[in-house]
Image (cartoon, rainbow, N blue to C red; front, top):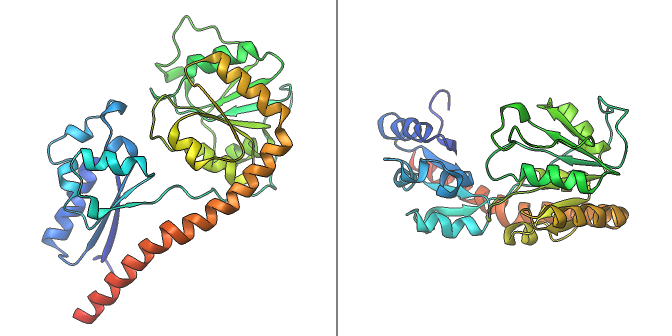
Length: 288
């Protein structure tokens, strides 16, 4: 195909990327098949983003040939903002492929058990509540990734418990080492409809989870997890203690869910999209 690909995937946002891809289709390769991979914030104003209201934003998605959303609840959100449903397909995150073998972590002097909370410090994450949770579970260590110094989710008045350790941004290999080493993975959001990526990573390595009790997460991760109220530190703390009491059971469930989700993702989501692309490729070749 050289410099004129017949299939173009564009991850959204950013909206200007969509403009560039559609210009390519219109001006250079009218036969190009454009797939818009829409992350939630492309469609939800609750994230505080401009994309759903941006001129030539969501309205341009209907110019694509296929629109991917990341869970069933986002199908209705897409419809509400004007995306044509006949274009929409669901492609969830597959369980991450992470080896159970590998190097150790960079820290050895932090008391166990370890709760790993991979954070991006976006506004949907209950950071203050996690800090309060740590104070309620002083016998455990809470390891938090991400750039907390640049975060607006932590006030200057925040009391950082002594059992909280901020890890900062981590290289992939180092992050995977912490996933292997931790006892429980925490994944929390304030918003419904969010498919937390760290849950897929935890399932990929068979780790127990403490997750927000949203409808989407309860449906996707119905094994291996304790569900909590993200706005309530007491609820999160109870969930953490419950997870510690059930580590072996939750780990076995998480591993079983990995295989279940792999098969479901491959058969019910990935393969139908492959079929669409195969049919498109066959039709294009016949025309040639």
